[in-house]
Length: 208
Image 1 (cartoon, helix red, strand yellow):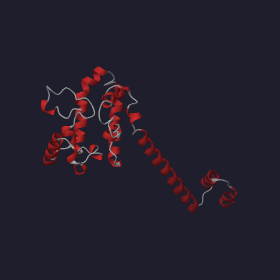
Image 2 (spheres, one colour; image 1 turned 180 degrees about the vertical axis):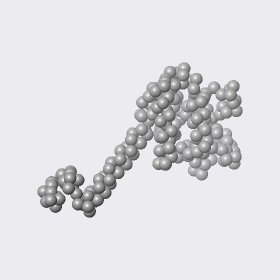
Image 3 (cartoon, one colour; image 1 turned 90 degrees about the vertical axis):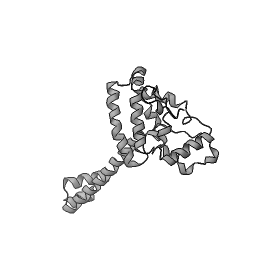
Image 4 (cartoon, one colour; image 1 turned 120 degrees about the vertical axis):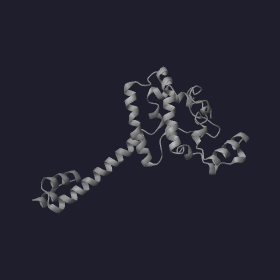
């Protein structure tokens, strides 16, 4: 009976349905493997599609907290507009390119959804009150990863010191010798610095 149904079926869905109704042992195993394979492709494709959809600048500034605060500051920096026309967008600086690190970052970002719901920084006043704490989280992460996202574009080995100003050469040479990472000196390169005068005056470096 199963063989007759198989012969009479037309199309993949019809054959699959017939096999599930009256499967033989070997045939049903093949169908289950095929169904699992297709389901795996759909899941993997959907997962990566969701990852990419949440990994662009338009998504980052879709909430007013980012659009009205840090995004406005970023537009006045060299990372947004410069003579070469090379722009670093939000995910370029804040989301790792390596897949494993990217997934970890996405999981960590779910904490931001909680604060969105709670309205932690939903006004300019609240944002400014929390700016130092927010900045410290980013600085700590970049310090821990040796400024990994910065190094996607900037690297000591690729620097032409003859094209840099005397001050830049001196600072980069010193940083290289002391094993410093980008964020040690460039905390204010893309966003306004929080008020650090009463907390750590020595940290006020690398303004835009």
